[in-house]
Length: 154
Image (cartoon, rainbow, N blue to C red):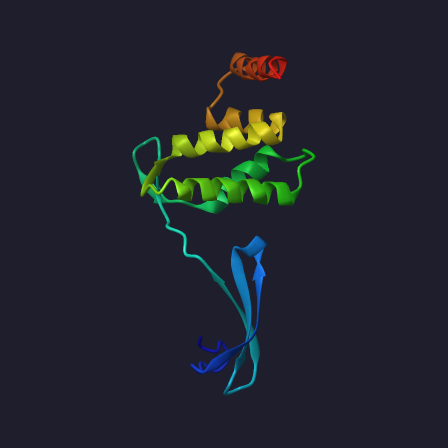
C-alpha cells in the first residue's frame, strides 16, 4: 500500500480489526520511509449493476439515492439512523445477491416499499406516494385501506 504522505511503496500493517459487523477490515499502517501512520479499509468488492429506469435509460446503481429516498420518507418519524442504514444495507445486499447485471427501477422501488412497510407504515405511504406518483387523495386512501386490511389479518 502506497503511503499517502510521501508516496513510498513500503508500508506495513501494525494493527488489523474487523469493522462494519465483519463486512470490512480496518488496518493501521506505518510508512517505512516517513514513519507516519494511516488507516486503510479492505472490503469485498461488490458487483455494481445498472438500473434500468422507466424510460429505458440506464445508470449505475447509486446507494445514496436509495438512502435519500428512505430518509425523506422517514422524516419526523421515530426511526433511527441505524435502522435506516440497516435497511439500505439489506436492500443493497439483496439486490447484489440477485446476481443480475441490470435491475429495473420498478424492482428496486418494490423492494424499498417492502422494507418500509415492515419498518413504519407512514414512511411506507410517503414513499409509495412519490414512487407510484399518487395523483389524488383517492389513491392515498386506497393504499391506506390496503394497510388497514392487512392489519386485520395479523
